[in-house]
Length: 231
Ligand SMILES: O=C([O-])CC(=O)C(=O)O
Ligand SMILES: [Mg+2]
Picture 1 (cartoon, rainbow, N blue to C red):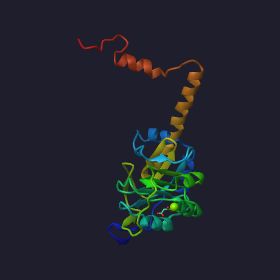
Picture 2: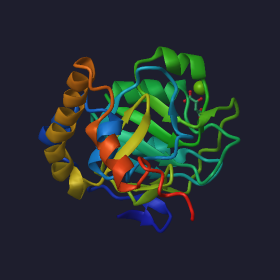
Picture 3: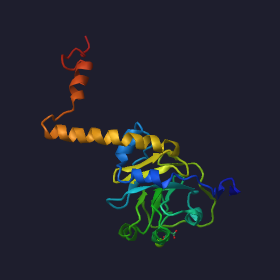
């Protein structure tokens, strides 16, 4: 660690290998949460600023104090191509910690995207650029650039714990975090989940409009005979 408690950074991040990330390309965030038993999903206050945004990559975490974004510039210095900046602003809803110039820097560094549990500015200019940005919303006023803050520590973003090197998957539905130690196990389940969905599509097309389990569940809870009514 460089710096001090609450004002510094960890240089060494164990990232999830590219071969695993590749297998998550094109996989919907909803499929990932299915594979994780509905865990790891960020609060929907964090939304894409542009339709069709899609990210898969390693988290580079940033903890900002309310009203300052100095450590975001330090994060840009530490970032590698493909990294996703995952940023907490400790509940600040009145000031923007990110803007178009920072987007240009991030694009020059070939980052994968930005996830901010907070606000940005320069909305239209950011929407017109190709970098996927997820945040709570926009506000015109900026922040100080003095610190403190911390890069590459454990943070809470969108009410989910994120560690550097965890995998972030985001699309129009929202953001899901895969803990680094779970990535391989999640990937293992994708085939079965996708096959189930394809099967249902075929069943619906063939006239079986509802899944078979609906009938079974109705019997199980006694809806069929109505015996569940209080006597
Ligand atoms: O100045 C800032 O804090 C953010 C900003 O507007 C930009 O990067 O364009
Ligand atoms: Mg600006």
